[in-house]
Length: 356
Image (cartoon, rainbow, N blue to C red; front, side):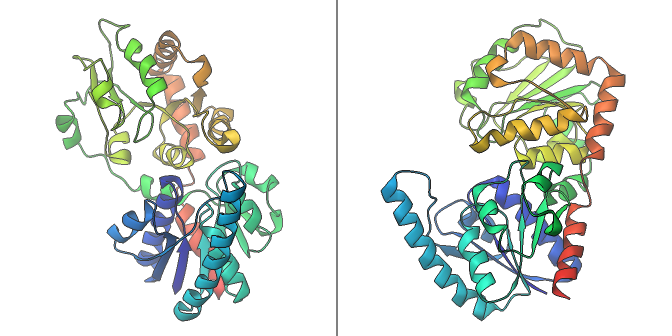
């Protein structure tokens, strides 16, 4: 099997694509070529994972009239380049994971009558996937809401490949010592993404001073860019760190306070973790809020809007969940039920249906 995957821009598009690629290699011995932007994070991240990568010179359409015109011209040029790439590579299927980088690749595949699939990670479809949905053979959604946004006759809700990878991670007991944590105490992890959030961190600084003593422990992740400016440096109950090793550390948690990006929601659900979500209000279509509400609807998370967030409210919400074992376990079970840990397998089975 030969597969071309188009992805890029942010980790929310890139890491699910890499997770699926890993499973395609493992299960099908697939040969995989990635196509992305030549200037964004995928140009380094994907080759570092051992995959072949071709970069395109493209930009998004956000901006003024001149930016939009330049974007359209670059996308047209990229489509012509992709036709040549696909003719040479001759893949069985081309898969797009959202972002404008998918547009020229999928349209080139359509021109060459190659089977096509797109994957939508969020509860609200992005512009690129909305456009491409008219042309592709198959659409994979991560949320039930996606069925209302795409042609249901060619859409299946199979989940995010990151869920499959997250579910395979086993608890590493050595991390307790490395992070100076007590494995016999309940653990709350607070993480607002790899870069952190300056606005939320100001509230977290106040939260850290509310309790002289805690009957649980907190691992607070400031984000790499925010650590030096974070005024509270920790105590016996609260450990403050700039970053964590993602899922490998989240496995240890009894409760996670987090943003609600698509990948984070998929990972935390697959791990079966209770959570408090603080959706970022700075994302397109308010999709983090919709992602979070989808989890809250099944009692897998408690949503706090950033505009309503305070140190006292966060403290009360954490205490309400962490000290109520029945509620916490109910939230954990509900999260796991929507985790779709077989996402990669189900997507691969559909790929086989399409190309055989």
